[in-house]
Image (cartoon, rainbow, N blue to C red; front, side, top):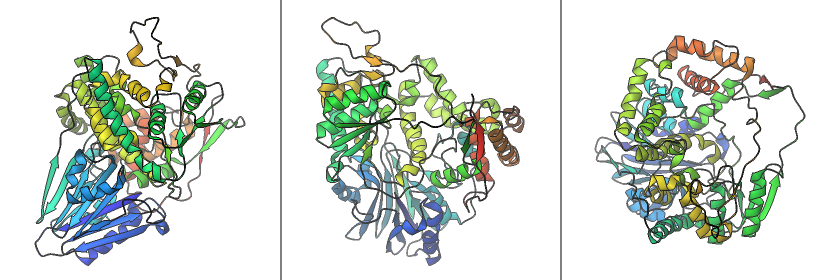
Length: 589
């Protein structure tokens, strides 16, 4: 994981005060969620402009370097580049990242006269910015930007936190920290002569669905070329990629891409021998000629209760890792030392299938798509104050005015990837910087340029898979059939792709969704004990009603409230809570 911070004085001839530089050097301990002893740093200074970089990488072997220097300039890349040498192109003009550079990244750049940064098309590697009367601050961690700009006393943007309570992540360019904003997708921020400018490139407009086989082939091949480029860095790893392979759509496409690129890989699947995921993954592995390991679930002894981490300890660690932009309801990957071992999965493949908002839709009529937008921004209106609902309506308005298909497609990239994943994946980035083919800048740009209904049909993913690995053409998928085959006439001479479905078992039990009375009581006491802090955005009576029963009916929203209450109470940032015993949660018989 890499962390960047840039400072630029507003007044000509003014330097960055030594006290501010020292604040940056000490604030990193609070802002970088790894042990202090593993943090390595670099600095670059010119009159009135400074760049800081930190990493928990054990050495300087990863490319591009933490700070790439040139003649009176320095460039830092947060994330990965498919071609590390393209850092030189970004050093000359960071706005190039908006369209032409392959990778999953943001870029920070400084010269003797200018400070700038740019996001890729999805901003999953975010750029935060703020200003004071004396300087501009730009960085990759929001808490760090706030501490350096405004000092150790955090002022929370309470109204902005209504989205955290509503959805568990942000649906805007806001952050929990007053005065700190996040740069939009495909955007560049430049500070020159003390003045800040922000330019934003529009997300691509989709072309109509292909009407001919020739046109379809050309569009698929363009996306295939972008996908092949994403895995190029894996050639230098010196060992096979370990791919988490299931029977689904996305991980098989990753396997096909690696196979077509000639990248050595091995696959692992978690499950019992008779589960469709295991059966189908085995067929994929045999078709591609790769090693396949099945990891059966641990046979735990029958228990009447499980021990879970105390909610306040869990919430603090989530806040420390995700900076208040992900709810403690989410399970964040815990810290482990940084490793360069290559691992991959099919995560984020929904972007090739028009995103999770549209995948939830059965009805694609204009009124139904409008309802989906409304529900996303204004969920559970009765729980919130009029001020909070009015703020949500203001955020929703620009999306409500757009075509529903494009709006939900772009909302997925801007918010589900650019805010939810940007926050939640911070935990895993501490362990290493994996290659994310489906979050590649060029791949996402190419995908957004394809008709949403065509991508939603899943034919694009199927065609890509068979282009890369023809032997997978008729290997079935787990779950539901490919969408484009449903209702399509089948001819005797045309083999139809099959599917396998696991028997329904009720979905299993989870303490997060069935918290029991003791865990409910802990959440209730914490939230109701801080209702005065939450009152600007939620109706206290509605919150009390939520917790009226012995066991929560809406545990996810209770966790969202707990997360925000912990922030507003001042428990974060600061010292981790101590002496909190685990909670016993009963397991239903």
